[in-house]
Image 1: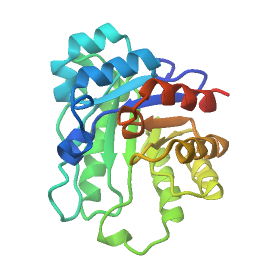
Image 2: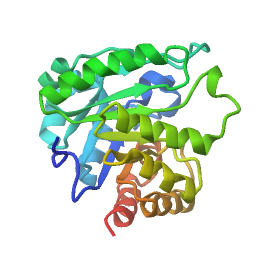
Image 3: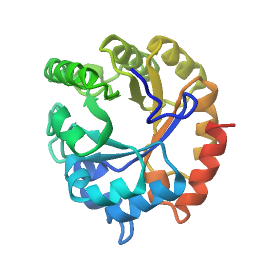
Image 4: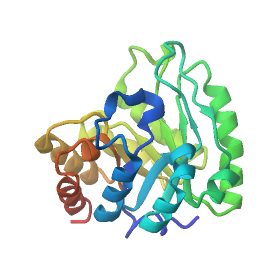
Length: 248
């Protein structure tokens, strides 16, 4: 499966904007609540891909196409309102994503959830269909639920990376737990499956760039970042600084 449409020299910087379903409007202000603002950032920053749920991908199809930034459609999701065991249900099919112009698809699996088996079952169908259509598959793998409470986060990070390889994802998106040594072990566990790291909550620029350097030194392929860019007062400026680290 070729990743050349969403990667440059084996590395990538994706602009993530799928948080609206998961978090509601709490992340947004008058500017970044508008998907056109995000599309403009992706275009000016020359991102390798922009991540949307199908609603935005559909309603802003013309603007996305005009930007020429590769579209990555997230096929499943959930709100942040329910406090029980996490389950991210499929909301979009591979064929729908392709019709919307997707160059890759994304899928979330919460390993450790009591619904883990259902998400793995759903993913298996999505993965087969996407690869049949020569569409790369990015899987968000986060250890969540009662079963993983109290367990070592570094070991869970490596476990998540290995799951990505075992279920035939092309790229696995992980949360960095803060130690380069642990992330290097996760990268080894992922084998030929590429790793990108979630940008996470907004943090100061110095800490963000420090983490980007650590992420790349560990052998990761890049980041899928959202709030640290489109919540920034200078989204293009921070984008350029991140890109210099990734493609140094």
